[in-house]
Image (cartoon, rainbow, N blue to C red; front, side, top):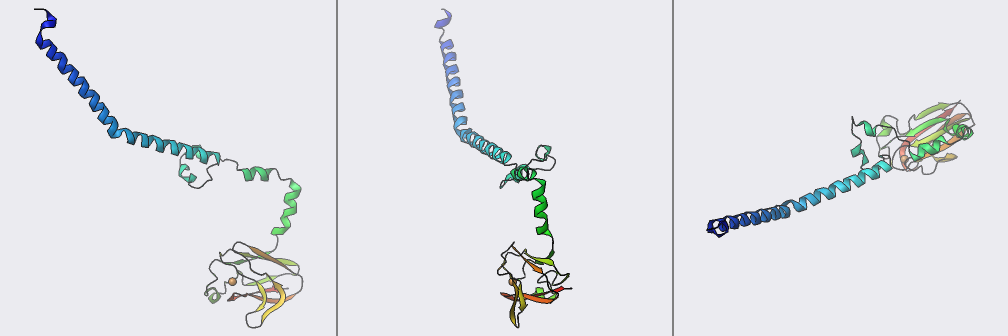
Length: 202
Ligand SMILES: [Cu+2]
């Protein structure tokens, strides 16, 4: 009897085929089972990479880009010049000198939250509430509150006296007035009459 005619041999080959088929089926099942997860993770990675590239293009200043700025990660600590600072660097010296005078003057801050009563208890509805300046000085009211306020010369009792009136100073806005005459100038906020202050010009 030759080798090929041995029925036991055919049986062995048959089992091998079954084993191979089972292996292929198992691989197929594993593929079905984890395939979507692998694709999902890959998509996530692509999205994250795209987002990183977008942040990098925007010098990591965009919304959510601070997630890439991590302590000890020196890659992102390299100072990057923004478009704004590039433009600033090209402003001629004369222009910068010309802008200087607008920042001179005495600043009166209108603090956050003075739209509700309470600031009058410590006289801090305008800071400083009682400002003393020399004639010719410009006073700049800076509204750092989110609500709008006014600085109107006069008193809540007698109303505006017509010397100066800021009108509505929006949140983050300013109002400037140059005091050329000596005297004591009371002012108040027309919409929040507990807000009072004075400017004394000597
Ligand atoms: Cu006000």
